[in-house]
Every structure is written in C-alpha cells, then in structure tokens.
Length: 85
Image (tube, rainbow, N blue to C red; front, side):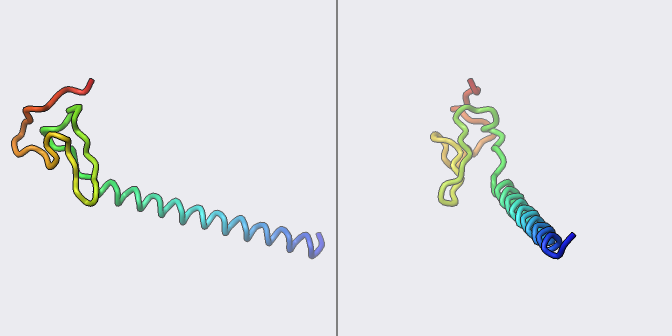
C-alpha cells in the first residue's frame, strides 16, 4: 500500500474512534439524566395507588398528586379514590 492509502485508512480510523467516543459520552449523559429524573420522581402515595385520578407530575418544582388533592391526602385512604378503567 502506498502512503496515501495508509494515511486515508488512519484518518478514517481516527474519525470512527472519535464518533464512537462522542456517542458513548452522549449515552452516558442520557443515562445520568435518566437517573436524576428517577431520583427526583416521588413514589406514588399509598392512598393513590391504582386510582384513576392520580397525576403524579411536577410543575415548577411542585409535585401535583391529583385535582382533588393537589398535595396528597393526609390519611392512608382517600374518599375520592376510583379504580382505573
């Protein structure tokens, strides 16, 4: 092989390694975001498990449980609980 072919192969090999490294860094970034999101998501309150009204999303740093009880119920049961359809 000539010098040109060898240089071309080495250049392509470096480009491939750079792309693989960039892809691995991006995947690690996505994994970290997913771990942070899971850690920040509160568990479903016992009184809300299986309820069709449960929302469980965070808005502006405030966890919203449902429309009837935005901050959750204080008891271990909820009078508005309804089974999922």
